[in-house]
Length: 374
Image 1 (cartoon, rainbow, N blue to C red):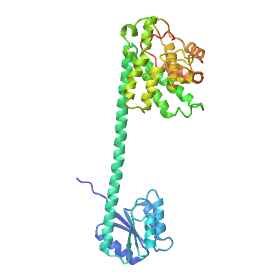
Image 2: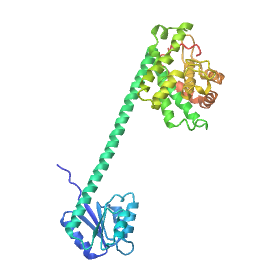
Image 3: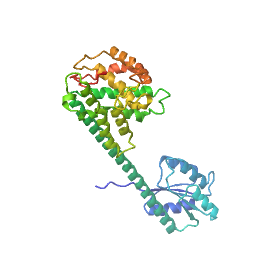
Image 4: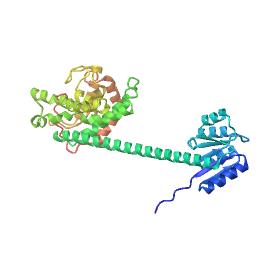
């Protein structure tokens, strides 16, 4: 069964009873719903309660004239799009121009012809209907675009997460390392944002990006052969040189995507983290020997998060350090391994780090990362 459409409602505002009666009878005969008012104030109150589809408006009326009524309609967010047709005995060009200036869509001179009024009413109602259809279509289109963007973003994030987890699975880890470092990076970035030096750089988008991009920091380990990646013990100097190439492999992998999307902030940050999270503040890190602020900020944040997590985790050649022991080593590395400002941020939020480490414990802590520094 077809749903019954509501009847179109036309408001007539005219202080001349004869005009009100004549227009009301004509429009009702044509099947329109009609509400008629002899003054502008009453009409405005009625329109606010039940907005009509179109308004026929006289100009010369007591209290407030038609121009003022139209201006108030157009100033009202709820009523501003209702088409207003002026019907007036005023025939001066200046009056017609003002009628359009205040927001009218048409102007009919009195005495009017019924056929002309009907034709103009019909035309503007059709235009209004098309306008509403376009608004509804655009709104739905925007909703579909948002849904599709969210779907694509979720799909991409799922793919990235799966790839990161694949890397961790080769490293015989449960993947809790990913969750922990994501939280550590987010907390550090939020704290740094309170510093005036970083308030313009670290905004909510930056914080979201670093939380997600941090999962890609060791993605290059997929290119390290198992005999090194899974070796149960410390690596030889030669093996360690091979292990260090995971930073370059990860950066190269992400750069292939970045070439297609060079302005994607997430990819740019992921690449910076993957390449530079083993750089050190004093320039003794790898792969590029960057120092100080030449190291990307995201990589400097990741360095603290990654080392803290490594210290708190079991290695084949060491026990898991306590929070106090790990924090002391982070403090000791300030100005040499780590950016001093990021260490100070860590100092302020270290209790949250300890809580995250406890909450996201590995079920099988055998993270075989072989960086002698940790």
